[in-house]
Each structure stands twice: as C-alpha cells, then as structure tokens.
Image (cartoon, rainbow, N blue to C red):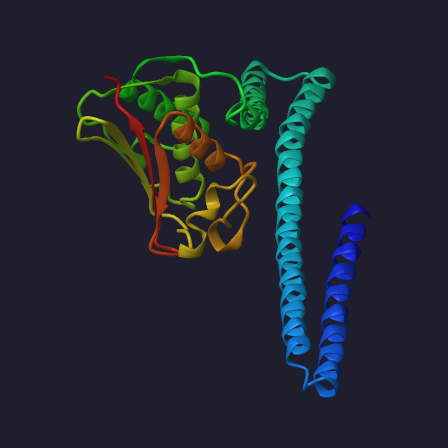
Length: 297
C-alpha cells in the first residue's frame, strides 16, 4: 500500500508539472500576440518564463532522483529482509528436526555445521548494516595502528574461500613485498573482505579471481582485485559505490547481498586518506577494483 501511494504521488506531481508547462505556454503565446510592440514587457515575460521553466525542470530532476532513491531503498529493504529471514528459517527448521526426530550422529553434526554457517551469514548481514552507520564521517573515531597489510589480506582470502566454499585455486594471490599501513584494523579488514566477496559473487558459476598488492612510490599501497564475471557498464562505474546501489548478476539475476559493500569500501578509503575506483570494459568482460591506502611512515 505504501508503494502504491508513493507511485500515485509521483504521478500527480508529473501531471501537475505537465499542466503548468502547458498553461504557461498558452499564456505566453497570447501575451506575445497581444503585446508584441512592448519590448520591455516582452523581455520581462521571456525572463519570467525562463525562470518558471527552470524551476519546473529542477523540480522534475529532484522528483526523478527521489524516485530512484525510493526504488533503491525498497530494494535494500527487500534484500536485507531476505538475508535475515532465510538463515533464521533454515536454523529454525533444523532445530525443529532435531527436537522432533531421532537423528544419527553423522547427520546431527551435518545439521550443526549448516546452522553455524547460517548463523555466520546472519551475523555478517547484521554487521554490514551496522557498519554502514559507523563508517560515516561523523561516526566513531578511528583507532590507528601499524598494520601488516598482507596478513590482513591473507585472512580475508581464507575467509572468502571458506564462506563461499570455493577451492584455493579459484583465487590467485600475488602478495608482493611486505607493506605496512597505518589504519583502523577493523575497517581495513572490512573493506578488503567486501572487495573479495564482491568479486566472488559476481564471477558467476566459474570463480576466477586475481588479487595483487604493490607499492606506488613511497606513499601508497595499491590492492587490485580482478574477476572475469559479468562486468560493469561504463555508465555505472561511479554509481556502484553509492549506498544501496546494486548491479545485476549473471543473466540479469540479483546477487545476494545488501548493496552496502562497495559503499563501505569507499567510506573506509576516504577516512584513511585513500581512494577506490572500478575498471571494466563492459558487460561480460569482468571488472577490476583498485584500492589505494597510505603506507605507514
């Protein structure tokens, strides 16, 4: 009902804008025909018309942006709801089975394993949503420490292989020389994990991810995470870092997630004095995400 009401409101404002433009044009044409000899009035009329039309155009632009924002918000709510309900329902089902039936020890262990995996998925979703509030500029202060970046990256790679149940060879890692950075360990780990998870999720059925680390002079570290998945249209390379924005997965499907991962990566990069961007030749041609962070002095 809320969505229907919102659509009616949007349609009303669009129709109102169209009616106003039509009335203005009719009045202006009549004014020109009746007062064409009066140059000053004609000039003022043109100026007034330009101001009114500019206002209507701006109103339409803001209306379109609000429509997109509402659509992204609705998609986020649906995604989070799904990500929260699915593991809870799964855990509840296995608990009811254990409670009502006699299950042999091997199957019982398998049930426990699945419930632990669902619990991890549930906690990851909750942490993703909570972290979105923590990475804003006005949120908590960062706790800067000296971090061995390759150790954090290796930890994130091991986590991704376990979480997504992919073989070790699915991710090729080029560690490079030891590089230390100065940053908040929790936030750096979150940014790196999100980049790797994103590459795995959008790789399709065959996961082939390439991860490399290198130094850029004496000031910056550069992490490159490349996949051979669905790719990104050039028009969306900057938009994908916005909150709630999601790119379609393989064959137009929706990849599981909240649409917050890349937003968190960009926020972490900014708070650490670094930057992040995406590179892609287009749909079906894979993508590369580049994260740069300052090296510790």
